[in-house]
Each structure stands twice: as structure tokens, then as C-alpha cells.
Picture 1 (cartoon, one colour):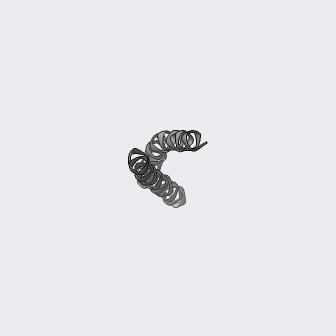
Picture 2 (picture 1 turned 120 degrees about the horizontal axis):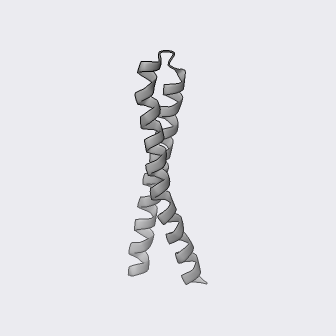
Picture 3 (picture 1 turned 90 degrees about the vertical axis):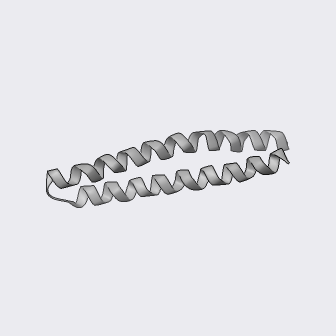
Length: 73
């Protein structure tokens, strides 16, 4: 039962992290394409923030993946 709940939590965390990282990349691309410095800064800041938050969420999910593989073997 705990293993099933752990795998559902892992999949949810992984999906959220990848979505945040993808959103961060999109925001960085949008920010880099703008010519005016004052309008590009919010997009760049949001993009970097989403990348950081996505990475922070991705690391524990990868550790959970490693724990699941160790328990299986």
C-alpha cells in the first residue's frame, strides 16, 4: 500500500517538476525575444524562478525514484 502511494506521489512530483521546468524555458525564450529591456525582465525573472522551483521539486522526486529501485532489488 505504501509503495503504491509512493509511486503516485513520485509521478505527481515528476510531472509537476517537468511542467515547471518547461514553463521556465518558455518564459526565458519569450523574455529573450523581446527587444525592450523593461518588458523582458519580468519574463526572464519568471522563467528563472520557474526553473529553480522545478529543479527543487525534481530533486526529491529523483531521490524517491532511487529509493523505489533500491527497495525493489
